[in-house]
Length: 81
Length: 81
Length: 157
Length: 157
Image 1 (cartoon, each protein chain N blue to C red):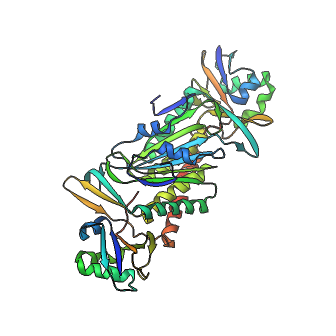
Image 2: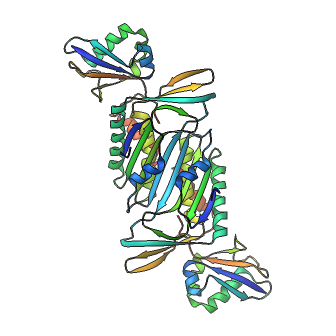
Image 3: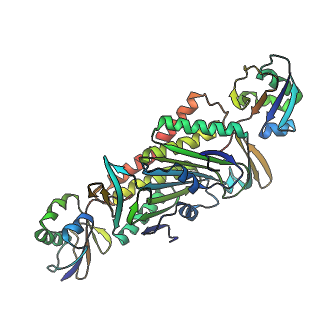
């Protein structure tokens, strides 16, 4: 199945784009999507402890399952305000 | 000697005017000015415990001496804001 | 009317006051507006009239600005207080406090409104359905250290 | 742009936000503006660029407005956050909180800015003399009860 990946801030720069489309195994979790990105972009690994994630513009957990067509977002620590 | 008396809010209403001119003895204090007003306007007496006073637009004490031409203000509890 | 402190019968302008205090080193501006409420102590308020001893009121506002700067050196503050007749929803007082960091802007702004209610010679005449009353709050005494400390406690709490 | 919450690349307007929340029963409106400072951690800042995950950021702002209403039932709040490039002195965020009494307006406004820094997916890219850096603050987790309690402690302190 295929998911849209959204990346922000420094992660967006490391990944070269704010929107990627990636094929992932059926029944993949957010965590599996992230692991595949870490393989692709080694600089991502450091972010795991401080990372937030969302599925379809709602905050999610790394154990959340993703479905075909989902938008999966990975967010470094926020700094609004 | 002669002083200008300024009254505010409920005191102004009880005194019938916001500005009075009164003759007071030489070397009178703010307290003496007040006492003469209490004789004139019995409704003033209740205000003594909660009253503030000023001489020439600076906060003063009731023991402050007044001089000819001074502006002596008597102020009920404030309620700005 | 671009003095940092003023007592005025004109409509108050919070944005203008914020502009007076903002500087390039400031990361935060907190403003407080006191508005005329349509009710008070169970009465339906129709309007208010504020009366001031204007020269002393301006000096008292200046004093509050100085006290705030002593307590929070990075803070720049402006305060305007309205007089005359005010309708429901109109602003009776505006405070703007700018500082490098937000904690000081919040604390000093809160401090200022507490002090205004303690020491500024301004009186509120409340008109409600069926009557009117002079509101009498605090006995003004700028040198009352306990009042100042109470305002600081509320501000920094 | 008269929604109570928004993420926008337009200039922010505190007076408009105050107008959105004021009502006849409100005696106090507190606004907070976050401004771009000309320095940060010893560096001379030239400008900032804010990036947002906009749909989730708006939901997070809505959540903060709900949390504030839960905590302070008389409070009505609006929050707008800016995105894109901002010059020194421009506002990155504006919060307006109206309530019957001033304590709630101050507390809820302070609470909101703390929560914004905790859970809203917006990122600050700081450009300074000699370089640039992405500021990384808090790991966003709206369900982190300790973070919420910390914001409440700061607000009501």
